Image (tube, rainbow, N blue to C red; front, side, top):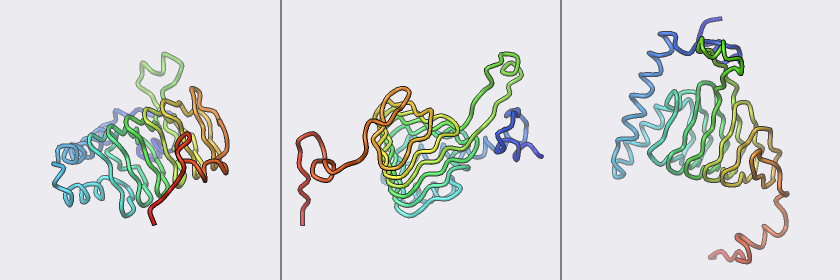
Length: 202
């Protein structure tokens, strides 16, 4: 197993191998270009996003600044994914995001972890587990997703939540650690915020 295969296997490995450091530097150079682009350079941003990500669907947009360990190289985005300012993707291994999912400001999605045993950390070992986020989710501002979690479809993760375990489909989940608060229900079909009724333009 080579070092690149090992980083995607869940096994312990050293991320400071020269081939990984060189690859990461090339990815981060391109990410720098994206973050330094002007708001009016829409076509340039679109092109750079296509180059940065492993896969990206139509209609996706990420507000700079955007941060990623490998610049999005290990990230698969569906279509119409939107991320507000300061999205951080620790994409040392794969992150999968479904169609129409939105990220609030300052969300962190982390795939990398470090051993609890101090002697292993001294030797700079780490491990990675993929994160999966379903279709049509809303990840609230400041939420943190840790390595290995899966979030189902049609989920709302409350602002500031720390997701340490899998979250099922079609729920509102909040807190630290994040827990299911309730199902998405009939009330949500009538009200969009507190006592504000849904009234869409025809």
